Image 1: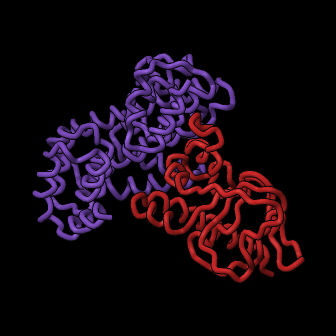
Image 2: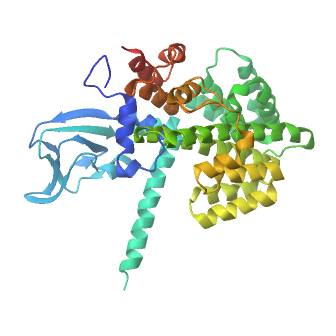
Image 3: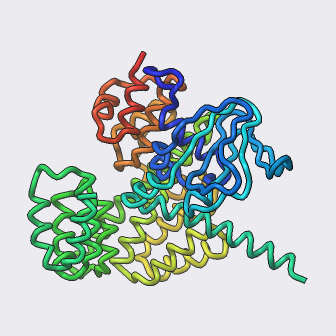
Length: 151
Length: 268
């Protein structure tokens, strides 16, 4: 924690948080260091709606503390915990949210918006390469899954 | 945005932009990060004029050697016989730098688990040295084959790594190729350090402070800002006292990451 503001995380500490996420585990820290300044810390009380199904989303969230419920009306689809992310595809390609996200406890989230991300990418193409690599890995995994499931 | 537009205009102008770039490199008021971008544009422009400018910068901007080598490779430069020795000497230097980083990693591998991130940061630095060496070899020997090696080593599969190393053996001058392969083969860190002992400069890394001091002194390479920032961070976090001179320049850095971490590290 910073000495000037004990509650504020240092950029180094934000990089360590990003690195601990499964989507960034293979991304070098020196590239994540360009993403860390984009992480806006947001605090939410329990039962706060973060976004609603049907809204256009253009940001991703990282759960730093607390739990978030992903649901359609009263049907819970998932309970996400610390070090999990949601909305990551909307970061690259704005889309309609397919479900609602509501805090299941008091939460601290980090939000990364698309616009500043694109500004970083303009100056540091390595960041875009990192995202492209992640997408390719997911696509390959999905292809392999489809092949395995084929009759 | 202004900088990007200028870079785009230079690139569009092609070889006619080379004299303009040459004048800018003579100026003292252009910061290092912009100089690096101008070097990259030179590489994109390619052609004899841009390549000659890059070659002249190897001497005058030796602190930007990494960017210049990558730009020369990007420009499809082929080393001429009169420059062979110079490029071999540069390749040898980077092999020596890489060995020093390997020895740092070896020392860290005996330490507590909370140094894992520093270990992996050094691995990123070694991977960067690998890119520089392959760019040099691409200029010195065979660009297409070195491209195959780059992809083979990035695939992180034993078979593709073995194929890449075979290409190196067949393409690169014997001692350089052998040392490169020893550095990047899939053996343990101990085995690789032993194989490359002759290139080690005998820096002492038995204490973490010595590794951190070496990184913060920017020796033997410049290091990524991340590696330096993380070194500053763990010097405070895990109480590794370092001389204050090592922190002071980072407290004035243009990089927010370095500046913020240096202030954290120096605050009692």
